[in-house]
Image (cartoon, rainbow, N blue to C red; front, side, top):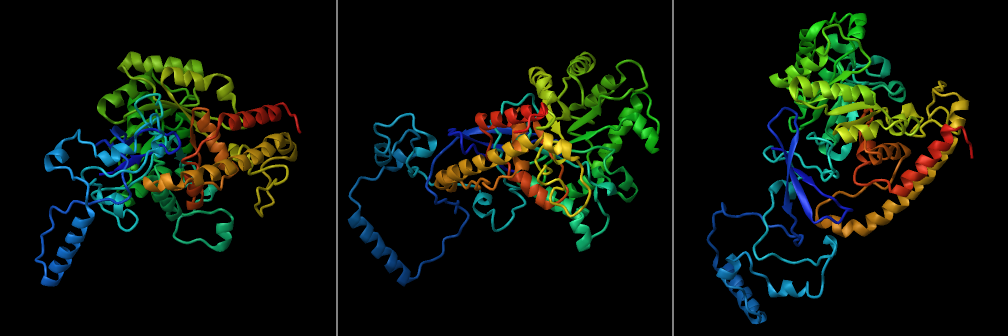
Length: 511
């Protein structure tokens, strides 16, 4: 069983949520809130099963001596057993700490001891030392209280894409070892992907985007993106990813030699084939591209997806790159044919491509209860300031320069502002981290990242705009960078600074 502990460190909330995954494959989670209780840092475990050992004479004398000393020091009246059994009983010593105080922040409340020893799962106490198969993994969902667009909750409002997995042109290599030269060139192995996957799952980044078309060249070796993802899940048996896979454009399938698709039966076969490669009988989210002409009767795609929902082959329906009008029309068709609603719409959105925000597409998604998912959050390195006028090669030894100097100069105002905001956020988080240290320690919370990068700014900017960013991950270092986005967010002022600079760059204004 997987236990997920959700904690809002910076909001001052008075409740915590424990989240337990449902029985569905790779699945969605159910959350129940319980009243938060403050307690001293000493945790007590149940000793009901322990057998009492006979005491030696010497030990009995020591215990008797200690008891007599404690008796002399004890002057106040102890509560009776009936009082302790009463749930309304209040320790007078504890009550005195709250006299004359109201409206306190939860972290400003004084420590107190409860009337009964507080019991805690063994996993929380020993999670750093050993794994317990019965208790599962532990992670924090900083977005547990997010007002979700629909029933699909995405932990931490961040996911990742597997678009480069199995793709030899993107640097993937089949095998177990890399030469130093290959590592410098950005090559990666399936073992690197396994480590990255484990890191992301452990830290609560569980939403995964894949496609039957990703890594297609490696499918004969069982190393396409879907197949590698299946291997990662099989290796990490405690993981519970939320998987969204995508049907390939039928014309691309024809061109790539994977077969002709006509009619609803071909769509059902594609869904079943993806499920087989993923090792799952049910796919959490099945996405279809909008820019395709599918051969069949009108509404074939919508009708077939509704049928797949009825049969339990998929749990949610998503689309990619749909405009506002097409998205509304497709949503209406799903409702008409099966009584279902569209769950998500994935499209490009980043600091150098904000069309989805300016056109009102993101707002339209929100109004219809559709999750806006942002692909290419780094804008191929331009939106993350990885490539700039002062660093045209991105710090790489390669002579290849993906952007010409004119383009880099155009966005120099944005890149300069990102560096300014980066320092501003870093100083703010360092101050907040020091303030929250003692509070965080009391709740076993992890420290917040303060070594902020411009790539992390690009991701949290997208979250601030209401979207779910899907950065690509090819190695453990990139996974760590995504994990570093958790637990902090951009302020309204910081978002406005980035928006203003992006507006100037879009207009070609160089400061």
